[in-house]
Figure 1 (cartoon, rainbow, N blue to C red):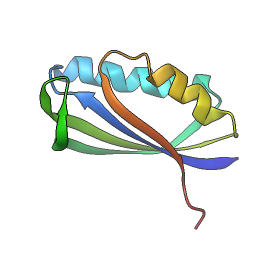
Figure 2 (tube, rainbow, N blue to C red):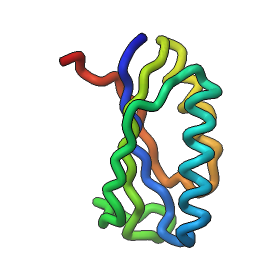
Figure 3 (cartoon, helix red, strand yellow):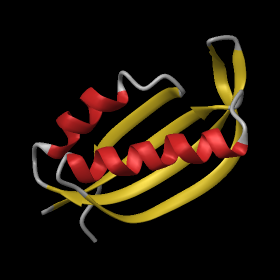
Figure 4 (tube, rainbow, N blue to C red):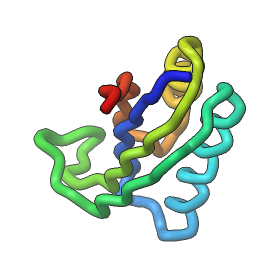
Length: 96
């Protein structure tokens, strides 16, 4: 199993319940892609470096997970089509 990290930016137009639902959908997609979540860091609402869809702020989450070599591709395919996910990045974490 490899260690991966997902950097996730969610729209600030969402209420708390809807924001939590988007995060739950991401968790379900991680498990469906064969990954196991080890940690979720909620960084809260932050200003983005540039506007995305006329929004200057976003909710930032960093998710650490374990998965096989096909997990990132499966995750990117499903995160790409989620409506309220503004940006995402899946990277392999450094082994420490």
